[in-house]
Amino acid sequence: MYSDRVNTSERLIESTRELLWERGYVGTSPKAILERADAGQGSMYHHFTGKPDLALAAIRRTAEELRATAEAVLNGPGTPYERIEAYLLRERDVLRGCPVGRLTMDPDVIASEELRAPVAETIARIRELIAEIVETGKRQGQFAPELDGQEIAAAVLATVQGGYVLARASGSPAAFDAGVRGLLALLAPRVSGRTI
Amino acid sequence: MYSDRVNTSERLIESTRELLWERGYVGTSPKAILERADAGQGSMYHHFTGKPDLALAAIRRTAEELRATAEAVLNGPGTPYERIEAYLLRERDVLRGCPVGRLTMDPDVIASEELRAPVAETIARIRELIAEIVETGKRQGQFAPELDGQEIAAAVLATVQGGYVLARASGSPAAFDAGVRGLLALLAPRVSGRTI
DNA sequence: GTCTATATCCGGATAGAC
DNA sequence: GTCTATCCGGATATAGAC
Image 1: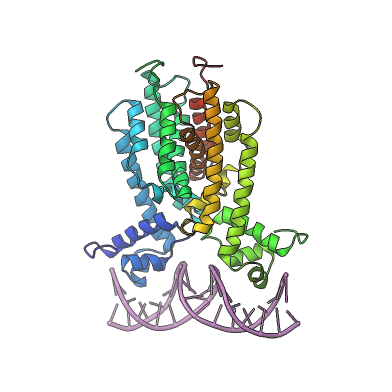
Image 2: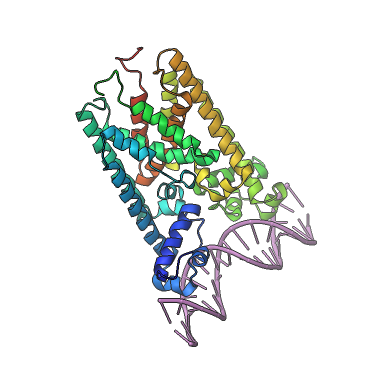
């Protein structure tokens, strides 16, 4: 429920974002959106051409927001290892899952070039940034030279996305945390290694 | 479509398994199941009490099958590292995703204790098995003693589950493979390490 | 811009005939 | 065991009044 101090179009988008996160695209009906936004049929079809159009606006905003948050953490202070650690340990509402990643399990999203694009781009950009950080770490001797930035970046992102799956399966965030700790242990600069 | 040489109940379960994999629980309608199984309304409600009951049978079978496959690979020949490697590199239809893991993104599955149970149990058992393998590897000196079996197991499973997400987001299996290679590189017994 | 009315099809299920 | 008929509400959208 959104305050009447924001306009209807805004409330519709925000309600759709919530529902897409909770129930996915196929599980979200226009009716449910309207109820949550406290809007009528007419408003929705005035501002948007239909469910896919509204979902696109919602997905774009969610993807953009996630990208900005992730980049802020990854571009924060510290060594390469510390920045990746900060990303992995960043606060998350684990049992809700990733609002962007969950869309990849939605058949209608994957089937639509337009709906999938923001998802693909967001993940690609974060992965690229992590890969660069790993390469920097290699140059600084913090990471072993045989590691591949793109591959480690994929492993980092996969651990997060898969961590949500394990957590939701078990009904507890503990599995997410365990996976992150496991990866960090593997990634940690060794005392017996090159540096620190 | 299933041959008429298996009975209707069987065709219903198999059709449901396929649809749950492709479209999830909320995205799968009784009507779609009936069409794929080439069965009528009456048959379905004769053999099952309704959609949740049929889905439960399908989920149980899928979970059991996945568990058996995973355990076969993990209990195969080789060193602990090689067995985990075999699990990670095992052939997969990456873009289809994990038939068990994808269910965790389904709100109605997660909301039902009964539907979630086979998912939770399957993942827990595979994780337990991987954890034991890691502990064995530690005793044999193949893995560093500071690693935690449960944590590494969670990281391994998360890499797989998250790999599906990355692959589906990008529309290519490459990201899955990259994540797996990244994790294996981190996990690999070092030449400069304790063993081999 | 928003409302209400209306339309069509689907989801999920029950009833009873065969 | 399977079929057809029927039911009711929801999903998704259009039309036209206000």
